[in-house]
Length: 352
Image (cartoon, rainbow, N blue to C red; front, side, top):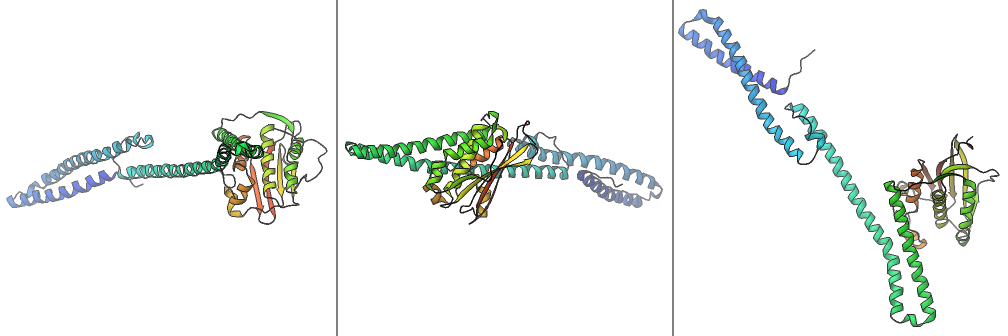
């Protein structure tokens, strides 16, 4: 098995050997010059002593030379507060040092990339928030200024503009509430109130709440089949209703007139059910699917904004489902429709 030596040792050995050969050759030449041919054992002893002295001196000097410079590298790195690097003992082995510096550099690169992504996300988020709030704010401001300029003296205009300003305020409140909710979901500050409830009844109640909205677009909200028996799940009832409501509202927004939005509840595994919301609307292009659950992301900018909404619905849906420890899925085909599905935990007494 080959003996692995530190590179500084190899340097000292080779340097000592070269110095010893050179000095010993001079010593032997000197002995030959003075005719002391019988003193060759002294030449060997001189060579050994010379080699040892040279090796010790060169090794010590090289180690100190390298250590001083490498110690400066460690001190400079410590200014970056890199506990993963500067807390390690100083090594003068070049290979080990190179590996450590490469690891350190890779870690810093990852940190920098992460910071860049966060900064870009922050800019996008602030831009989206300002854009979403700007429209209703300017709308409310416009109506109020019009009233102050004299329109308030006209009873009909006053009533009309106040009603429109009120709608703008309601939209602002809606956006702010969604922002507050998604912030709590993302930082894990939202507490779920779990209980056992019949998810079939909850879906039917949501159908009833959205019946008029669906009727305006001539879209039917239906189950895929009759469910004579209740299906009990364990979850936060209010939050699950918000998930179902958001998914249904989206299907109504992007659905075609005389279309259908169908909800099904199926057993997935022993203690899980999967709830599917399927529509026959316009569908979603594949390139948009990976970003559907991002804050304020809209597939159709113009169409989405004309339909209203905060742009946070699907992001909230995803966070609520993940807060329950469950998964949400999406499948879509342009011109055919979309299907959003998510899992929930069945109650033990009802699990099959």
